[in-house]
Length: 594
Image 1: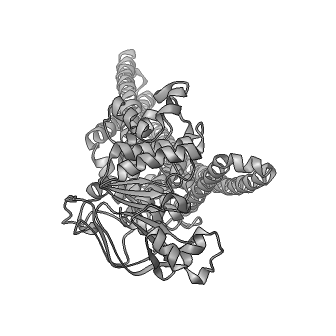
Image 2 (image 1 turned 30 degrees about the vertical axis):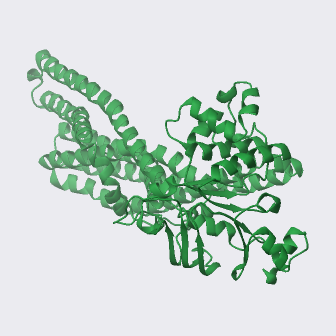
């Protein structure tokens, strides 16, 4: 997925809210109860001016009518309203926020599930730091947004509408004068909100870039230290940090303009009340009690507007988080099950490449052209050649890490695009050259090869991979923590654990991307013997750079820019005196010769 433009948001607020609604709709009962409680909290603010108006007008018109009993009744009424307000506020602060947490959790699960289904192309073009920012920090804002957005706008709308209706019963001209300020305020606020939204979007993009840079630097810490590049990394971080500072300063500039304009309109509304209301009192068009009510209702509206202003920052943060969430959800899934996909009916593991062509979707680099190849069930085939010849690409096409551009790949006579991904990949075991271990124990990493594996099954897989010996010598044996990416283990140890995963999975098809490259001689012999046992009766493809490991294979394919340029056994290829002969004897091979 291409990175979003850092300067503009791509979706309108209305469109985002429409897409966001299904998440909110799931908890609509809680939301409506929250809005009911929000309405209850408005009672105090809306009834207090009426209480004071009653006391003031009664005192002005007939002081004798203003009895202690009347005052006590009004006070008890206000006390009851305050108790209701406290209970409603408790529910809003509790269940309202919990509803937001539920929505955030649902969105994060959907985002993670979608990320799991995205192909290699997406991850080749998207920084992990950006993805992490989107499913963590950005969605943190959604919790507050989910709770406060409907609540704040509902309260504001209710107070403004009710206040307008009540004030119109007192004096329509003065009410209209006061409310003429509202449309003008709305126009100014909309313009500044748009700029604030853009500023928050740029801020989120930049913090994602900063996270990606930090992650890159920390994960490459050993390389940084080895090359003495600490100062260079610090300078890169400073530049990114300064860019973030500049963007954040711009954000606060728009926030300041937004708040200043709101305070200006506050003053304008009070000015209308003082000037217009005072003149109306002078000419007897409004009573003193009604003017008091006007002042209190205007104060209530201004307090409400200020709450909306304070919420504006949170609103824009939430909308930015939602937008960046949907950017993930909009990333196309390139590899997925066909509508009529059926589970793979695996037999002995024959693989057929039928006129297969492939080019990478992002740069359209043609790697394979009209390749025809049959790998018999149980056959051991090695792929050799210089870098860029398509060895890894060919192997990546079998489990559908990428889909062929043209042609067809069959496993036991079944087009792999017509079978389910789970069944296809379940039939294939892969040991890659770049070993990845998850943060956890040794046993947890080995058991990745088989869900629900017993400890004995894990140990047997480790024995077959030649890993049991060194595992037993670790501080906690199979429960030893391997560190992030297996940093606590040597390269050879990590490789053997990765091989143990495949032993545990026990698949009919094996793909080995230089599986023994990181092992010492003794371990290589041990694992090589185990791999021979595992490969017996199974289809095996090995990408080999160390040719001594594949000289006994059934067939060796030499791949180059024109596809398969040589094919045969080790002895046949040496006798041919071609490219394989040069690779075996470490004679430089011209690139155009391959």
